[in-house]
Image (cartoon, rainbow, N blue to C red):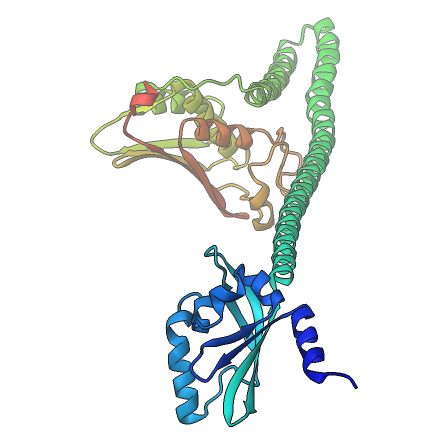
Length: 401
């Protein structure tokens, strides 16, 4: 007949998990080899001692109180429930294990049996898995950042290519406008020169001085127009190449304006008059005289060109907190829909008709004014005239000298 006690002892001693029994006061009554190996003790070192010796703080100090509380109230925290705790080895190291406690009644006694399942390998595997997950998350995060950066760079490249294509498109449009404008603006005065030269030959045979002078005058006007066109092209080329330098100096604005007014009055149409007026106690300003003169002449020339005979052109200057120059005419004005492109190169308003022009003058004016640190604005109503305003800082700066 099978000896049950021997069988039970054999099972306990050969069990993979640790098995510990304690009495109602927490004193160890038995501990199997698996538990001894797990905690690093010999049986004699454990049996007869409080089981709290196998527990790290805070469980070490609270274990006896837990048993007492259980005996008094019957409240279970581990018994019949089981939970994950940490054990204290003889060498002072700790390890995780799952503890299941059963209450045993025999021979009018109460004992507790604890089943200890080492979780070290599982925890190590969990930590490795967690570490692997963190590394994986870091890798994914870095790859995501790289991907975002790559997408951003692609978007930037796309934008740059788009801008490049847009600039190329604008350049092609400028080329088309230039070819169209140049073919018209050059052909008209050249045709006039050719016709006048032929007529001069005809009138020379008759010694018709009046007609000869008339047509030599037309040739001079045509040459002057061609020179103006070429000067616009040269100014634009120098601006595009960055060859225009600003040389600011102290200038008498009133004196300069009066000289320009006198010069431009000579090319006005019949009964056109330029009226100049200055406001302010001072007439001195710190600007580039050559660039400023070019801007003023360009704007007054436009006022003359786009205004009819028997009209006034107002030219006002004012120096207070800022230096302001205003050129006002009562000419054909600029259509509202054209004003947004007014300062674009080669652009001309739709109502200019056969009035000659390159469409470069206002672009050059704006760029010259900008180089001097100023601003240019325009107010215009079709058939009611145009006002151009140039504004500059009146104070010289150390970096201007």
